[in-house]
Amino acid sequence: MKITKIGISGVLSVLISLSLAKAQPEAISPEDWALYQEGINPGEVFAEEVGGELFNKPMGKANKSCASCHNPDDMKFVSQIGKYPKYQKECNKVVSLQQRVQMCQAKYQKMKPFSLKSKENVAIVTYLKYIATGTKIDVDTSSNPVVKEYYEYGRKVFTTKRGKRYLSCQVCHEFAVGRRLRMQWLKPLGKGTLNGVQGTSAAAHWPGYRMTKSKVFTIEQRFQQCMKNAGMKKLPLGSKEMVALELYVTSLANGAEINAPGLVR
Image (cartoon, rainbow, N blue to C red; front, side, top):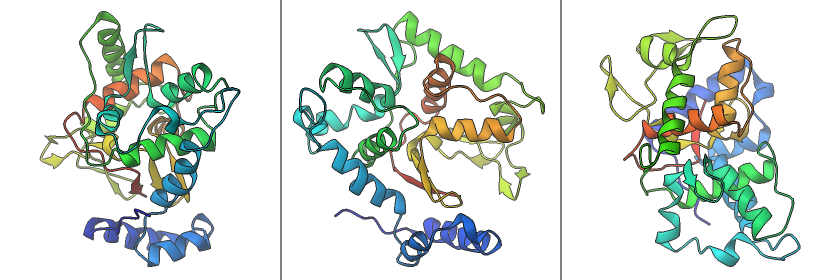
């Protein structure tokens, strides 16, 4: 079982989370407390024990598993994971990795796909990102008109102010970089530096395990949480707007190594 120990930065995150948990004990489950004390990322346990099991489980009328077609030890397959969101010729649009799983379930496993918000879909995608750890993010942003459209649309979603607080992703992660919001330093989501602050390459560690929620979330679910906090109407998971935003934010981390699931506050 490949359970990675948390490094120095992870230890600091855990210490911070534990201090927060004292104020909000209901946010941390007893099981997670035990894992934190052992220096284990609960998200990795979820990836292996839930996602890995589903990856290898025959399902649908075809009685096939993901492993029937894909070998997690095949680097040619694993290296493709960092290319999502990715253009799919068969539907002439850009799809997220979550949607690609749904497409495979419908086409090859002959089953009703797990919904994007389901534990099962999140688990499979978390497992895929987990086995891709160490490979690089390499999303396409310009190879054809559809990809260009999604990329530009994603940038528009990122920069457009809306909601009762009239905020955008850009306000927090570009304009306000280096400032604090709810005790958290605001940082850029890309690979480089902005205003002297090193970017987080955010897309490289999602799906991520949120310690104050005791649960793994995908990057699109994290977008929704930010939208809710900003007083915006949440964009639907899998919508063109959400996939375009995911493509744009992921492109900011192009070249960064995947290290998922992340361990975040």
